[in-house]
Image 1 (tube, rainbow, N blue to C red):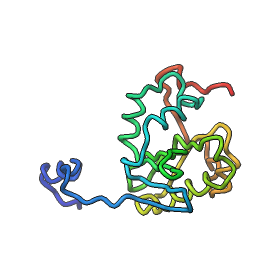
Image 2: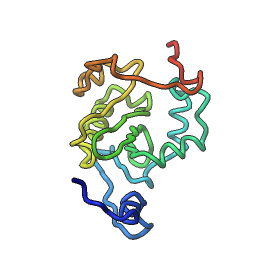
Image 3: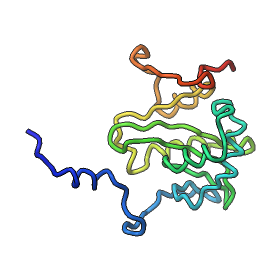
Length: 174
């Protein structure tokens, strides 16, 4: 039998910590002049907007405001070359069982140098994510890349379902 807890105690569990009451240790990895960091202060939202505005998956829905909201509600892994944003990976998670990996991007001039592999391995090794039961993603062109990082096609694709609210999100032709 579950113990009864007062509502206020449950509410406290669901409420975010008050600003300044908790010390945060952000995830950080270094490799030569490259850094991966989850520190929001290392994120360059304008550069990320520039990357993703070119990406087919966001379409016309990407605005600086929508991106800011998405970044604010995610764990963002910035890939930096010195202080320049050259990539990103974003995670949406409940921190217990599930995470969705999205908006993975490396600038064209830094692709095929192992940085994408390092970025995704770093995401998967993050202390809050490494024990999750499932990390999922959707990709239209990088299946072989993710297969090499221990991702698999859905064992039961007939179990996976989606709800599209707008024709913008209908499967696009590539």
